[in-house]
Image 1 (cartoon, helix red, strand yellow):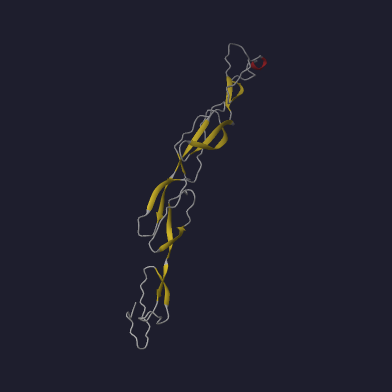
Image 2 (cartoon, rainbow, N blue to C red; image 1 turned 90 degrees about the vertical axis):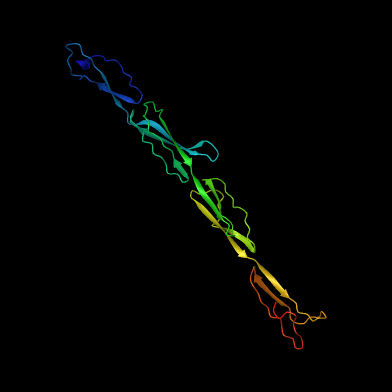
Length: 220
């Protein structure tokens, strides 16, 4: 019978397992026969999925390697990640080589976002397109009659993963108005007037009434 004869030792290709011959061991050998070795693809063949993100200047950096398994000589099952600030580039699945040499490389482009500074001083918006994660700094702005307080919201050190707008906030400057009242001979004629007014605010001050005298300016 076929089962009683000595058969050659077979070495399966990488990623496959020998499962036997296509002739039953109980088959009687009464004439020439051809026996063919049978193999089964392994279902635990290793492959890798590598994820690369675009650098701020040039090139890409490997951020993660996934060790996966699948059936030899079938397609991989690589899945892209969801990464804030990045967009995955097109990639294709590949054949799972039996020797474990298959590597899928997935690349992610760094996104550009709108960065806007609103100076709120009557001037134009300050706009630019900035890559995610790039260093950003707020511009120096001025507003006549006002003192700069802060940008709202606070400006981060690097570009967020979204279009961002920051608005300048200001406090109005105040100035002291002092009026001294004097007689024509230079001596003090009344109580000094002193008051604080906001920038560009109007004012109207009536000069004090002093018996026997007429002010050279009734209203200042």
